[in-house]
Image (cartoon, rainbow, N blue to C red; front, side, top):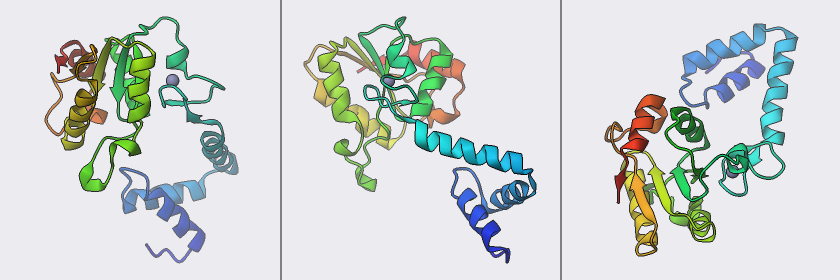
Length: 200
Ligand SMILES: [Zn+2]
């Protein structure tokens, strides 16, 4: 996009890389930031720096945290220790927790297996999940993955790895449309999806 103001063009270009932001919206946001007060620009800059410097992955579940050791969900004493809900993205955890239907632990894979895109089991947090299941004596694993090809492939891989190990494995199903991205499903539907999970 040529605006003949290189600094503004650079800002618009960076904003347009955000998901769901098309060129027009990026341009509108760019002009908005340009016209904003210096206090707002400073606050925005500090917020961006804050997430970059302070947020890291929890060493246990790989969700995001600012805590020195474990995250909020791993530290919470009021959760079942023998049940894990496996999600693709850290953002999925808040959605599942809002549903109130799950009171166990979480594990974030940071993606799903996708041979087409060259994403193999070693490229996501699968091995640490398998280690946790063994080391933490996990009795039940609920797979809350997207209902698409990558989700299916990941479910199949995990079910093969856990076969014969005495772990109850289920996948949320009811209410999740085929090809459905769980980003777009409301928390009540997600709550029902957990309650009606299907054993694998
Ligand atoms: Zn954690």
